[in-house]
Amino acid sequence: MKQPALKAKFFVLAMALTLSGVLLNRTASAQDYRLALGVRLSNNIPTLSSSVTGKYFVTDKNAIEGLVSFGNRFGIGALLEHHRPFSTVEGLSWFFGAGGYVGFEDSDTYLGPTGALGLDYKFPAVPVNLSIDWKPELDILPAINFVPEAFSVSIRFVIK
Image (cartoon, rainbow, N blue to C red):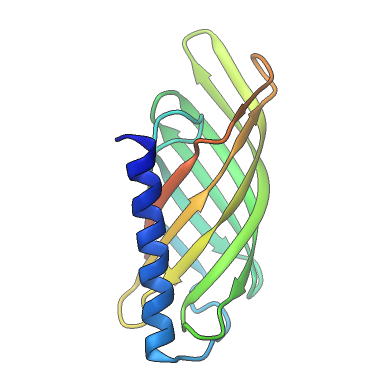
């Protein structure tokens, strides 16, 4: 999928979630799930591309997200994310955070920090969590390289 089309889909989804909450005029509450597991669909440029994802809230607003990527290269990553709820949409929050990753492709090892900025939504009537994010990476190994093309959609099943 081409980058402009992918960015446009993320923008449309973000706007739809935000507008639906404004129209429903719901109030924000604390995070209403603790643990969710699922898949993250991404372009294949970053080390942490399409992945298995798990998110666990250690407090009402702070989560640890783990990723195991089987995309272009095998990769493992973890991020600490801080969530801030929107006052107009129950279940919707925006988040930011940082972490690190390591990946392997052929004889190369990829290692570096990663950031996170996104939207996270827990559907009120079903145990499903959806998030869209931007997780840029900075390869330190095998060479210094900034990878900004790390956009994704995650869908997770809420365990508790």
